[in-house]
Length: 416
Length: 89
Image (cartoon, rainbow over all chains, first blue to last red; front, side):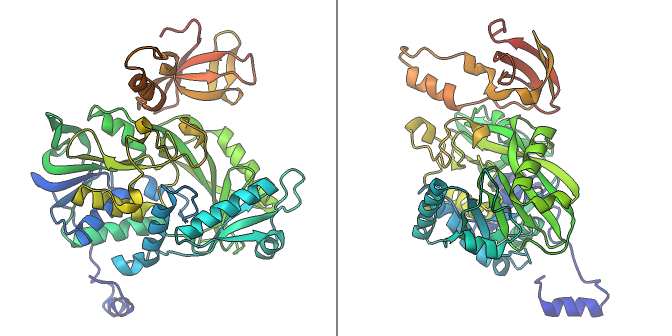
């Protein structure tokens, strides 16, 4: 079933009786070539690219709950490729290019909207740092523009430019950045994988790994034993507890990140704005709600909710940046569990167990990475060599000293 | 969250700074032969449990003591707190 304008017209004339579920609900088979643990954004995109690009047909995605029930449905939907370091930026730019062709590729409207991401700066030092970052972005093939105060004022006149402590001096703008419809991304990848024969098996929790003599042969699940030539784990915030079942301790800790949305308002923010003096970012959804967030709650957590101190901190950041937000009423807030790595950069690599592969450590930047994460993980699973843009995202980089620490804060996950 | 400070009684968690797993108190021997591997594990690897977690909190806006707080990472329930010096390791 391919979506098109004609199809919608035809279904309208037939009373919409022709629509079918987007994917099957199969029972697990006894054996697959490749099993992906985790039916979130990254797991589903991995399966999609395995089937559509790397020609792997016998693939299953095992999901503990329902499809897309984790962070793919709980984020602030921002896509961007505005990183600095060589091990990171080419990967995120690869992801941005995949976003740009995504809807045509998987034939579903993911509402990818390149409305621009603006990072504000508030001092000369920060301006210089952004100039450097912008140059790094351009070197990787991305776009970047350094704006002065007048240009930012023209775009967003309501910002608090004359804040006594953190006056807005300008910003770094990536026009190709923006937002996407997060659930649509999960649905598009799931449908595209299913159409190529991937089994998406929901309500199937992995309870253990079949590991003999350092080789992984499959998984134990709540729906029985499933054998596999290769097993790839992409479970984000649950990485610690899933990989503990394979006897592994990882350079990862789990923390809760909160996000917030206001009541629907008239259009007032047409892009994404981030505050450079605190941690606060905001955009406006197509329904009119202001979607915003800030720092993670600072302590280890597996609860999909946060606490009041961070709510206050985020609200303070919002008020400092755009005082008019104080007139908006908060509608909802929620939390998701982030797999915070020790240098703030993800891991897409083999593990010390043969046949067991890991995709983790996305911190709170996993959504924008969804296409490239899946593509690079599929590349690794299918060919046993890393994709050129993900070569530095190694599990052993902490032993060898090749950490990729964008923020430069060291092995303190709650600070990344 | 309220942290039951052993000297000062229940205190708002906002008065504290969080460091992480209390196993950071068990610093490896820097002169041992396996020191590089031991320090890699010490600095970078974590148990990251879903459930009871012993962790270090610093009473920055209080008496500047280090506490080992025992807390459930799934429910956020705090099960106890000890001063680091008297804490069972």
